[in-house]
Length: 130
Image (cartoon, rainbow, N blue to C red; front, side):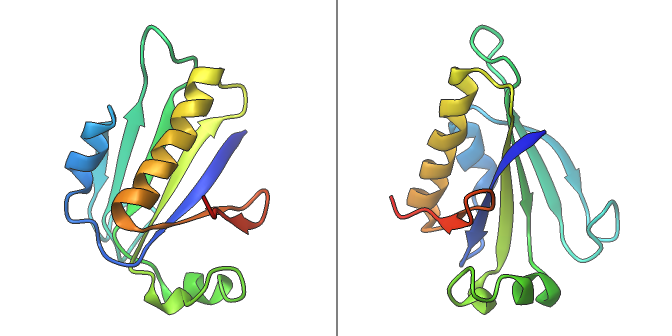
């Protein structure tokens, strides 16, 4: 079971590859529109794993867009969901060690700060204020 945080972008992060690399993430896969599970948007998958410290690692999936159906589902949860232009899912396994746990939250804080992104915790059903 994964513990996810959802990351909503109001502006497309044109430097997402460099930003994730600066945090130690490797770009693992790129799926073009029309391939994979997303028909309309490019998907980029990043993985962070420190061989000496991580137990499971942290994954970030970035989708370069968001469908109207998805935006409608966010009504009442996210302020002004129509302004969301891209999204990400930051995941760690529930059995991850404290190092991966901290990296998960550190990366969310980084994305929030760098891109003024909205971080939503679906398990707690709340938006991060910090």
